[in-house]
Length: 488
Image (cartoon, rainbow, N blue to C red):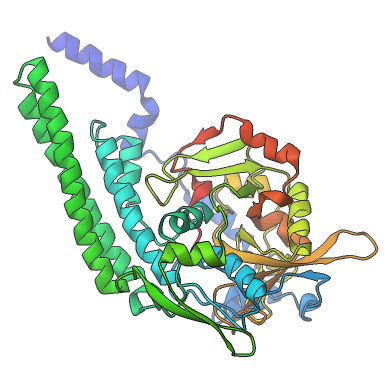
């Protein structure tokens, strides 16, 4: 017996020498004193280094990296612009996706009916978004009840029970199911404007409920193991029914908490419409769905196409992200991957036809808050840091250096008269009227190329060859793919 143990120990040491050395605290691969002396020569303490070091001791990098050669405000003229009025404010919440989707519809309603102003209630749809995401998580736990706790999907569910972020599919599914109401019918609350604490408590409770569901199933399986096959099948069928009953009770608690935080969604309401001259046009009673049907009436789930520029994946293909939806009985996130040039062609056609679009990008890159511009020339990080930055868009995505982080409403393009190509673009943001350029952000076409990721268009602006791509069998992508985090 001892010989066997000795032989096994010898084999383990010979097969896993690197692991054994690592556990023993091997110095190889670490920073030795000699290496430290060598790499410390990277700082030469020149007068220029001293000046930068002194400045950085009390000043933000972005302040010092401002490119003075690009300090002038960008030209704010646009050759083509969608008619919009007013700027919304998502406050301290991750609801940019919801504000953006509703702003696209808001622009249509204001223009169609000649309104002085109008805003849909973001809080109304946010209520149902949080309820539906809670159900999506709990039903996901039920669906994966037979998988081990360390399964990747189960782990992802518990890591992401819900959030206040999202994407356009959530907008279309929620409106189709629940309709819309004007902002004054269900106004914002402190919790809708400041979602972090409400979200923290909801996630904590959902994770606890998820454990209860899995625990109940495990107990049922153990008890059924002692029964005959036929009796076991019947017992497990009853156990699944019990899980669904438990889920309904859990969602009732979630609903109660959401009412406390956000208010109770209206079932019927009265709304008076006034024109731009403040003259009364009509006063009627509506349900949320009848209001949407009368004033917008689009088939949001079938009339829009999401396109994406992801250079890491093959162009001309359709992709679907598992579990990336807001509503369990809704649709997963589905998009067509295209070169950026083709996306621009469709965006220009939509703007020229006075139709705003849902747009998402990596908003934090080269963003000047003072000017409200997104411009690769805004900051000179290389001169300040001594680094060179050479990754292209594909490499940045592959290394998690870039990805879509924020949704806004694309409303304008400036076409250069000589080249016929876009020079710059403008989006309506949801950070309030004082943020950026009059509540909007202006981006150069070069920035658009590098940091734009997604655009949602009406099908009438999408060429037939691209629409035909939707006939493909989608390539399935996992929910945890880092490229598809919710936009905030």
